[in-house]
Image (cartoon, rainbow, N blue to C red; front, side, top):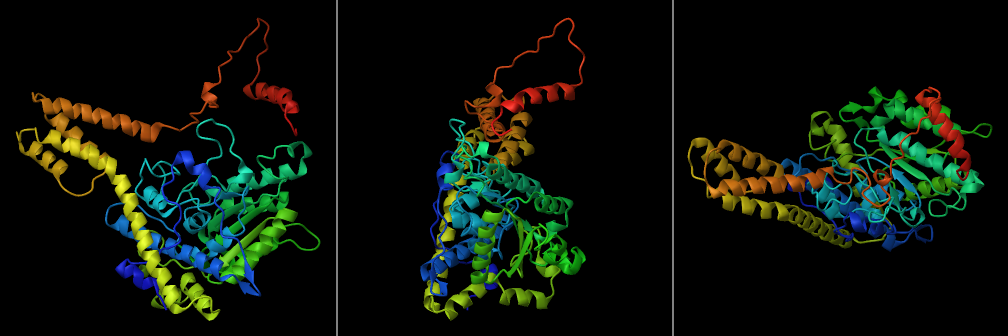
Length: 517
């Protein structure tokens, strides 16, 4: 039986199921129209092709997590946080996420995004490297594992067809920050269902049949915004599906020390709907039980589309094979017994056992998937790194040619030249620091190379400005910044009003003319 924990040591692991590579902002809207593998049953079981495809996606994601940690620890990435241990629940979840639905998730959802085709492995690594050219989700500006799909056409500013695509609102890093936004998206479905005047807007909703999917780690359920959101969802009865990935720890703090009864589903029992009163539905399953989760998610989400009753899906016995993030080691706070249990109950290992027991694949076929997976992910990683480094090496080569023209007039100049000329990978920001220091230190030097160096610095600053200061607001023809300003006109006898009174008057005039008001 394959053990993924051995892979942490040799950093070699699986990845098949070639997901589309190389997506940029301009074609991202086509990427989010990919279809997840549909559910196909074989008698009382599952279709072999579907199951093995899901297993491949799990292997891809695990290998990506393992390699991501290596890339950070070898200096190629600054920080990494990944979704290892949550692969099987997320391929099951992907089956019930439909076009038109919305995701408001967090930074552990890579497997889900791989399964839907929203992210490729190359995209994953491009974001890990903070590649401003090839990260299709944030242009290198956000932490890794932060996903998004365009809600407006990036060229025209027109709305995209939300019903024809998977919709992912841009992730945020603060834990729990996804909750309130998820509530608002679910509330939108309620309005589209209950307000007949909105039924004509068939680009956005099919009469409120869409669900908002929200993921969160069990530790973050201790935050106030989680409880406020669950309470509001239960009161308003909106189609909000909350998936809690419970690995038993909040970084190093055991769940028993932060959640009443040591279980968020038990703590929420008072919210549960019954025959007499509305509330929320509560479901529980084990993270390694693929068939049970597929059935549970299918039943739960189908019910929600009909009733709009919110639900919490508490997924227990999740593991974190590499610990919380690249900044620590879970061996420091987990017992040997716990670590051994996690190896035995790793969701991918358990799924592999189930596949073999069901006769869907032989041990040789499973090993072939692993081998193919390993090579595929490494190749994707290498392509992403090469694409990230190409423009940097081009700029660095030009700089090195200039620097060689500087005389070694003192120790500082010589040291700066040595730093710039050293082999190995460097970031543009690091190179720019050395270039500026060399320029300022050589004030008074009459050499053509110094003028060339200044031009190089200005070029890099201009390019960096575009990388980090563009698209902060819409740059399409529909941009609010292009709306002409209408200056206020005052009469001699205009009354003095508070700002809120002026706004209220405006809304009293404008809202009645709005469809559905």
